[in-house]
Image 1 (cartoon, rainbow, N blue to C red):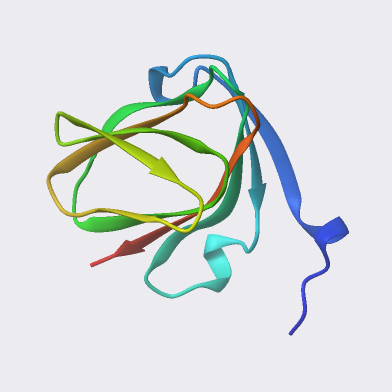
Image 2: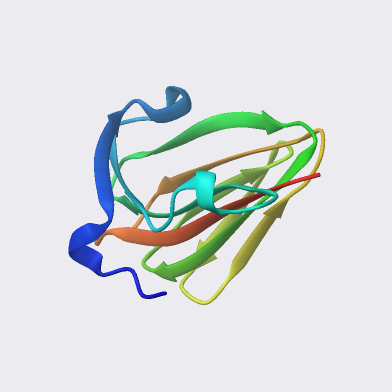
Length: 114
């Protein structure tokens, strides 16, 4: 199966999980079509915007940073991130991400359920 970009659904979320600004989400595939995967999407975070801190229960989220740079709060610790890096947040862990750069931060987010 090939899913064309123009067939993917996009939305803009304001103050996502309590974060600053607006984040564009492009759903790469519907969760209804994926076993043990709750989310597969591309996030575009403009400078100054971000996803607020949140916890994961019975799942692991992966952020694959594809462009730009930012700061992740990983279980209370600030860590700079940039393109090519991976953020892993497991069961009962917390994280947030904000774009601290001057260009859009883009990433693929995947949530795998247990």
